[in-house]
Image (cartoon, rainbow, N blue to C red; front, side, top):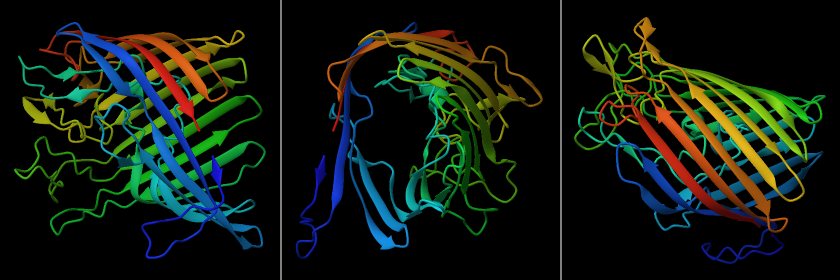
Amino acid sequence: MRTSFIPFILLPGVALADVTLYGDLKANVSRHSYSQGAGQGHVDDAGSSFGAKGNESLGEGLKAHWQVEWDLGLDGNKKFGLNETFVGLEDADLGKLRIGYLNSALKDLYTVNQWQSGGKMVYTDQTPGQQAADNFGADGLNTFTNPGQRMKNAIRFDTPLFNGFGGNIAYGFGENRQQDSTRASDMFSLGLSYRPGAWFAAYAYQREANPCSAAPAATPAGVQSCPKQDSDVSPAYLHYLEGGYRDDLWLVALAWQQAHGYDWTDGLSGDSRSTIDIDGQARSPAQARLVTRQVALSIARTFGRYTPKLTLAHGWDQRAGGGTLKQTGYRQWIVGMDYPLSKRTIAGIAHGRQTFAAMASPAVNQRSTTFVSTSLTLSHKF
């Protein structure tokens, strides 16, 4: 949707600007169940957003550009939150510089995740005998894509494309350094890509310095405390590789990810509050230097207006303390189909199954736990 004159009623007067309004509304009706508890029927938001963006020519090929995007909750269970939002400068020959709340290089990838899942992991307690998770959306690659986050207080530079090659680098300031802390919880992101025609290959690196969510328990006020100077917490980091082929008929994508300091349910290091037992002591993923390795394969083929899809994913047993933590991996498969009702409206169906081994943090009562999800999704772009 394009509009030439938008009144900004929050300003003292009425300002006029040339902007583009856009949005993506996604909702699904789903059934989530797991082997150690009761199933639930859901109406979920599956990633809806609404935004405004614009640019202004500054001359000599230089443009100022901006974007404000909000996260919507069509099911009424989500607060009106901020998505990628920034202001910056762009030049076709020199690249693009942005400042604000920005996608990491990893967040921009995940081509292997071809699903629109409304379910998510809700971590509650890992104590034996207690429920550890519910409402897990096995109809999407939620575990695999957890570390793909946006960066607060960030600055990012994207290069222009050179014969299919591109790159980006970003830095997010933690802004939380304390007198007795070694350093702030800054975040660094690097992305490289190559796209010769329909083929693609990409790499992402992400590093969290001094993860402030590393303490196993929050302070009484609920504020996450930073590790002190004598802390044994190492930076959390990960490597991600993906490659494949994508055109109007086919999608074939293979991705591999190895992370240090992240559990299966972590977005940022340790934010799920899961702990790892090392020599009888409960440690955060960063303190334990936990290593997770995952791989995912997705295939889709369009026949007329129908696009059947398949995804397989596997997480190996985790590593920590110089050895392998047995029974901590997972396996997952998803099948489904998309059907376009118009150029901007798509209906889809998905069925997924994910099984965590008995000692993985999402397992319930220290028993192997299988999550099953079936969903019908309707999405509309404008």
